[in-house]
Length: 111
Length: 111
Image 1 (cartoon, one colour):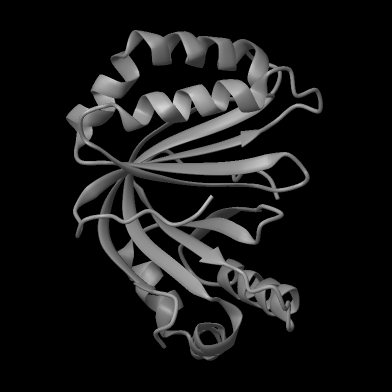
Image 2 (cartoon, chains in turn purple, cyan):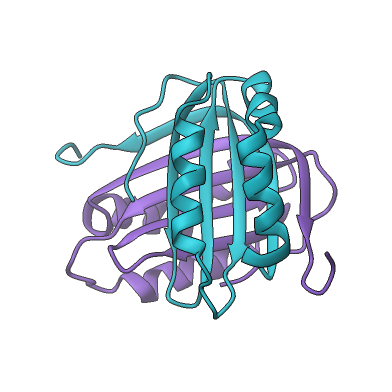
């Protein structure tokens, strides 16, 4: 996973933290499908993701506005995946919806 | 790393994405010091972090309000660490300050 090219703020972030169970059980395949689905939704801006060897992971998806997030949540395919996820994928998750107000960084090569 | 116990929104999140260079060069030690420093700052609420085997990582720190974030940034020790970080630690980073408006999750054991 790597960095997303994003427009200037404001935009929205969905911060999803999860603990993957020891048994993988189709996790990677399903996560790929969900990520693919998100990229097709109106207002999707990008996504950044990392998961450590202990199974704890953070995925941040970025969205143009709250309407885009609501549409994504309402999407039936996503809902199905989410329900599956809720019952089988994760031992524990936390989801936070946040409005990005400022952003800055150091691109590779600059200093 | 694991989940943070946080109050009900609104609160603030600092989303920090980074690509660690191949050479570690004191990274873990310095990151531990910075994390320790943050926990001593007024308005600090918690922190969640994950880094994959490819060196791409996400750390989200949570703060009571923007004043707390500004204080943290102004902290001299942190500033020193950040400058060191900027020049030596990371090939690339992106930092986003966001206001968390809604939060929900599934605690372990519930369904």
